[in-house]
Structure formats: C-alpha cells, structure tokens
Length: 203
Image (cartoon, rainbow, N blue to C red; front, side):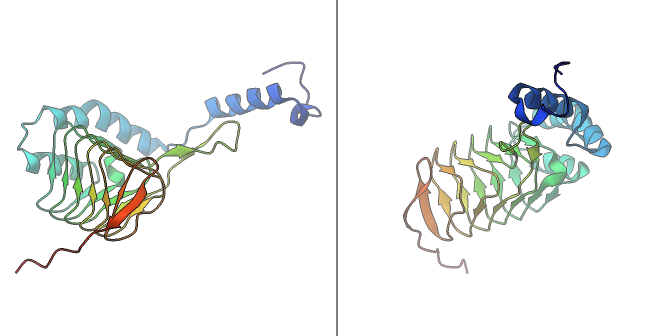
C-alpha cells in the first residue's frame, strides 16, 4: 500500500483505494476451512478418479459425486469428461444427463431437475464477482434447470438464471435471464424463438 496515503485522503485517492482493496483481497478468502479442504480433496483426488472411469461407468461416477455431497437421482448419466466444481452444491434429478466436456461450475447451488439434458460443452456458471467494489468479491448466485429442459451443445447459463420447465436453450446460446417454460431460445443473449409443444405423457 502507498505509504504516503493517510486515512484522511484514502477516499479521494483512486490508487489508494485499489491498493486497499487488493490488500483486503489477499487477506481474506470467500471459502470456509471445510470448503477449502473439500476443494483440495475433490480437485486432486475425486475429480481425477472421476475422469479415469470408463465411459459407461455412470453408477461409479454418481457414487463418487454423492460421496462428495452431491444429490444425484437414478438413473443419471454423467460423462467422465464433465468438469464439476464443488459437487456438494450440486443436485440432479432422476433420468437426467450431462454430456462430454460440460462444465458445471457449482460455486453456488446448481439444481438440475428430472429428465433434463445438459449437452456436450455446455457451461452452467453459478459464480461471478461484484464489479461495483474494487476488490470484486466473489458472489455465488444459484442456477436452476427445471424438469424436461434442454441446455444444448456449447450453451452458457449464467448466475441467478432459472431455465424453466421444458425450456430449450439452443446450441451456443447464452442465457443471462430466466427462460420461460416450454419455449425455445437461441442466440447471444438468448432470445425467444417460439413455443415448444409439450410432448404427450408416455403411457
């Protein structure tokens, strides 16, 4: 921190504000001790085992996620190349799937309903920073993907977004706001394309 800055002129000196913010950022952490231990164990042990499993060993991967605190329904199909951050913040309903190379960034709670498809390369990002503050503290807003929704290939779902029941986010779409139930969206930012007809119930 700049030694020439005194408390009286700190508020009027942008450089001093930035120095103070960075000093504060280095001295604090957004994670509890338990979370830090969990992150180390998952990133250097759990995730490594997860990635080394055969492509159809869904049960083993689901069991591993549950061991680290995730709530996983049955049957759930998660590919070995999926990247999950902080699985204790993840909940997945029955008969859902997550495709190859998808990123489920669970800094905040990520809730995926039943009969949901998260396609290859999709990114659910439940984390951001408060840009209104100089030290930009970590924020962890939740993401919800409701039953029968589909997040297509390479699509992005941002923090605080709810993908309502039956909604579809098209390939490479970017959802920064909630998506209406049983509608199809595409583009960046995602725009409503048309209504999706709700399929008839399976007998």
